[in-house]
Image 1 (cartoon, rainbow, N blue to C red):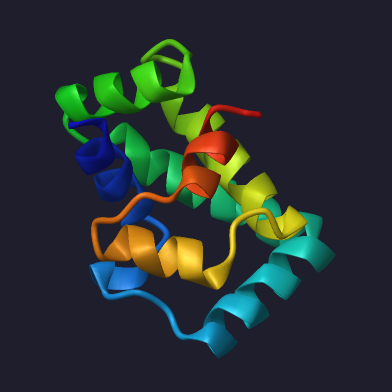
Image 2 (image 1 turned 90 degrees about the vertical axis):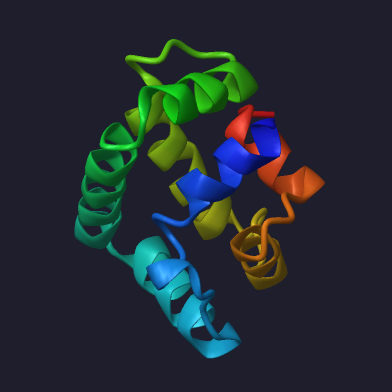
Length: 113
């Protein structure tokens, strides 16, 4: 059940839930790495999208991340962004999540470990 919540939340990153190409992912990762403004915009946009998710979804994500529901949107997006920019979340991790398969790397990143 938690996998479903994580997948729903990751759809905020994966455009239209269809996944992203390797080239698009690499380009996006480099833009996030190199520009504090791009990172800030990404986190802000992601936070708004996650905040609009149903309460049950946010509760599931909060439980997975060991945080409060109120802090979930910003924390989720900050951790996701850090995971992408650090290289801890690969294109295959994001692609798997878009197909409904949450990888151990995604769980580790979202839990902040």
